[in-house]
Image (tube, rainbow, N blue to C red; front, side):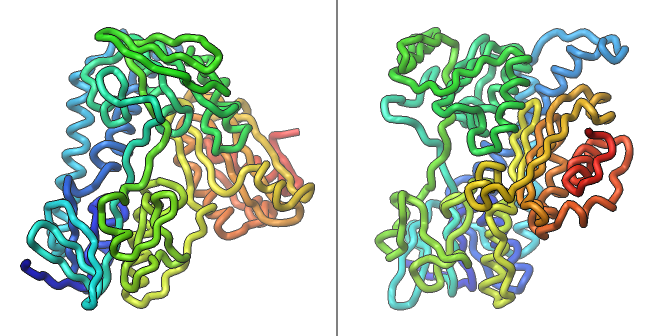
Length: 459
């Protein structure tokens, strides 16, 4: 076996892995990056970027349909699915080429192949075929894969999100099993493109991890758009023919559609990777780490979707950078999970940071104050034709602990909420700062003003 030696060996070239490799190389370390597929991982090739490209095409379709309402003459002639695919693939290809160039420019050695972790007397290494890539440190960043449910076999007309991306048609009808982020985004895009969509969610609300006010606002918007939500419903069985899928729910009702999208979450890719054999502790398939992302094995770290918590690309970026800086002795600041912003890119968008009102009350009881501002009072939101809410949660006479937004484009506002929550700002601290008029950010400003006891446009 041929041995190669590096300061850092990264197993996995997705968001966490390539971010760690880039930062480590920037800090003067020699780096090998092992990836069995393509640099960029799920986010770039089968997740964040391609789905948001499709959602943008869906937004344009909605804008064309509604153009007459603002005095623009336009005709909507339907969706060219092939052209949408070409647009999506072009975006991904451009970002992929840029990432390849960036990695090459940093002098990172990219190893194509499936790696396996080994740990011996000489320390950790990643074995790829007949080659061993030994690192002073090794980062595990193998990402996540689509989950399904017992009794549901993917294939044919039963799709995962990756297979849904690969469709070369706009379905006439779709059932989406799962009302979380992935399910809601696909439901939104398909509806904008003309499909009849039903979302089946086992819990009582769509995007059930969000504040209930956000969930209800999204549900109202989806009803208005003609998206059916079967909440508190679980599947009993599923079958398919050459032309349709039939989903039977636990109440005996049947839903028949062209396709079924199974969107019940993603699981960590840790099996068959040699982790446990090397002594790395796992729990429910996730890698157990301390607050500084160190595993149970010396000089072996983990980041991204294989670490318990939010499965978000930007969390993976941050953790990858954190590990590179920790190895370099820079003592980076631990970013608390609750300060990581979350965005659902549906129509309307749902964005949040911090804790929900219910979670805050579990900890602080009646010392929690929440204020909700309706976007109907915001001029910019009225102009662009979106409804929604801004909700801010604070501790009485204390800091802002949660910011929750629903409305088109509100994902662009959540960074201000992140700063407020992350810096434990009091609404009184924020109230003096102006928001440009007319912008949607004024709605967030109104909520801060109200919680500071001096509302301007609210009663």
